[in-house]
Length: 456
Ligand code: NAD
Ligand code: UGA
Image (cartoon, rainbow, N blue to C red):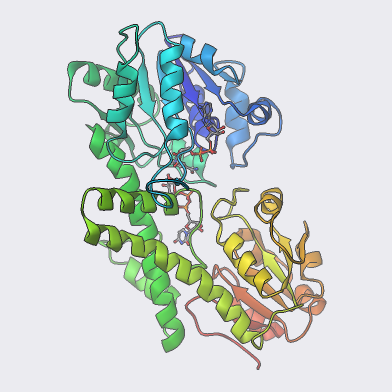
């Protein structure tokens, strides 16, 4: 083997990223470590800890050949030449910056583990999403090692999206690597370029200084989320004016300068990163004395909160101002299709608001029911988790579509209608159903940013 790569953190990023590197670089040994024993056991089993289309095949090809999973963080560090750090960097919930700043405690712990378990210098790669200038702090901690070892810190943020992780990793729009502008920084950068060059065309491997690389990741997420909030804000105006958000998005997106992607109006964006990364950006702007810039970006999150609340308010208003005691079937709990991940899913907030109104929830999702149970474990009220959409809809007054699972559009809505209380409502929070057809069956249909189709 040419070199040993270690990844600390076997989560949604560490696992798939390293599996693809191992698959594409059979001349490198890749070890993925995590302190979470259950997670590592799952990575070693037939039942991987996360659901991603195509991931099973990639892992099976490389596992045991040049891809290994372990809980022995110390041994992994000792053996590695290159260490990717892909631990979680959630929003800090205590002390200074609470609610906005990134909580870097897991991050810093890895720096100390690296010092303790190294007997030679190594390349340390920031894979997690981090505030701009984190590499400076990381470098200072690593430089404080008593053995006088040289560690080189690189930034290599990850841009994959869940549900399409394997394809995104195999065919990335770009790979970004930030390095110090020193001879050792440039040498380390080349080592990382060599790895990605196994399968990524060289022109797609973009190099930059470390700070640009760190900041690009935060801003990319902020820009993507900003498009969704922008279009969601206009969906509210569409509902007042009988303009149709699908027509507006389509026609607007045909302008090459705007582009068609990420203009899908919805109940709101979720996921572990958009909100936390924007709040982190807001915090950084405040920290650097840029309050106008901070409030500009904060609005993206506030608009998302508004869109989620507006969706629930629409349900209550149209169901005669009360949902108390009414069964509402939630179709989808994952934050997006093709994943079981529910972190920051709009479904959580929608459920909480509906439970406050004493609705009875029947939650169905093809992959996310286990996570839904955990998310709502402290909620009071009537909640059922059901693995069949028709069972969930039985006796329901309404269906609320919260995730854009393709299969939802293929269900037998006549059968669903027959199983439901009347008048039957559908609130399509993802605009994925055939609204005219549903209306023809007898449903009262409330899409996002489009005219409601009712019989009332
Ligand atoms: P995750 O919570 O799924 O995984 C992080 C893992 O790190 C956990 O399993 C945890 O046990 C482990 N860990 C934490 N501290 C550790 C330590 N000291 N030693 C060993 N293991 C440790 O998180 P994730 O979704 O994979 O995200 C990781 C980072 O990547 C975050 O900064 C996130 O913002 C960024 N990111 C995430 C995505 C995504 O789609 N989820 C995409 C791009 C970037
Ligand atoms: C996002 C980014 O797309 C990735 O590039 C990034 O690496 C990742 O965050 C991260 O840093 O964690 P992800 O959150 O996995 O990826 O999924 P997205 O496809 O971006 O969807 C995020 C949310 O926005 C979902 O709830 C989705 O349903 C919603 N969305 C997306 C819309 O409401 N409308 C759209 O047009 C697109």
